View 1 (tube, rainbow, N blue to C red):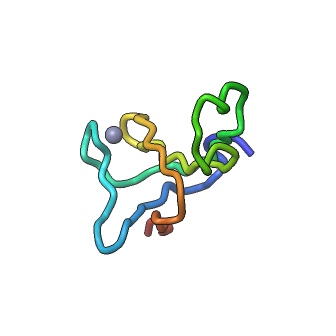
View 2 (view 1 turned 90 degrees about the vertical axis):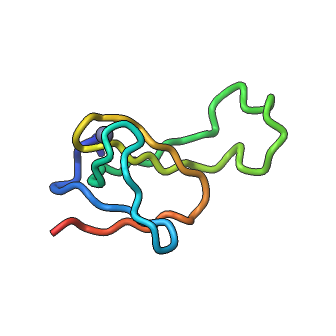
Amino acid sequence: MGLFSRAKPVTATIGDKTVSCLMCGHNEFWSREIKLNTTGMELFDVAWANQSALGLVCATCGYVHEFVGDAVRMWEST
Ligand SMILES: [Zn+2]
C-alpha cells in the first residue's frame, strides 16, 4: 500500500462541509492511514494514543491534513 495506491483522489466531507486544502484551497486528496502508536506517545495522556489517524494529502500541492476520529467521510471523485 503506497501513498498513491488509489487510482483516483477522493473528496472529503465533515458533516455538510467539504474539506478544502488549507494551503491551496483545492478539494481533492489522496488518503492515507497514519499510525499514531509510535514510541514517545506516552507523553500524551490521551485515549487516542494508539489509534491511527487519517491523512488527506492534497492532490494539488501535497499538504498533509491529519484527522483523528471518524468525522471525515471520503468520496470517490468523478
Ligand atoms: Zn493543496
